[in-house]
Image 1: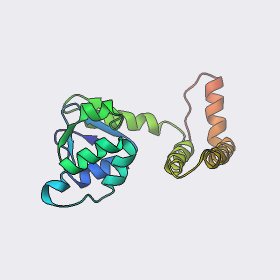
Image 2: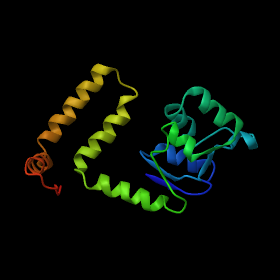
Image 3: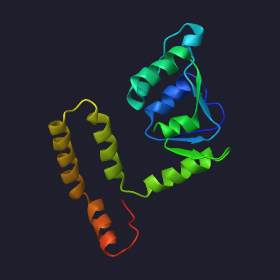
Image 4: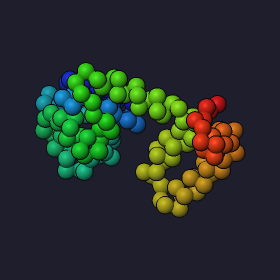
Amino acid sequence: MIAAGGLTPAWVGVSLALALGLIVAARDSVFVMAYSNIALSPDGGGTWGLSRALPRQLASELLMCGERIGAEQLHHLGVVNRLSETGQAMRAALALADNINARAPNAIASIKELLSEADGSNLNQQLARERDHFVKNLHHPNAGIGIGAFLNKQTPTYE
């Protein structure tokens, strides 16, 4: 997860943000992939991240024109997960992290792995992977903790 405020550093900063699972940005943040402005091609996985996060035409424009794009527009496009007021991006990112950290770490790890594998899989392969992770997590002690807490209307504390 990354929290962005103001002008997000060009190049690797944007590539790094795209590589992470979640982006929280202040409303006034801007992102830029300015490689073409100085006769370079992107590195740091920027083309990989943008090609998966945005329609090809928009990714091409951002990379080829080297123009700034605001956090509000990226939020509208689904690239930025959460917007915050100026100066509050870190606080919002930490609140989101607390929310995720309150969940079973084995389930979060499975979700991350399944999402990483989904792009290169057909539906049958992904369904098989989901089944395998589901069964593995069902037999993990945290499943009993989570199900028990749900049935008893309590907040679970995972291992």
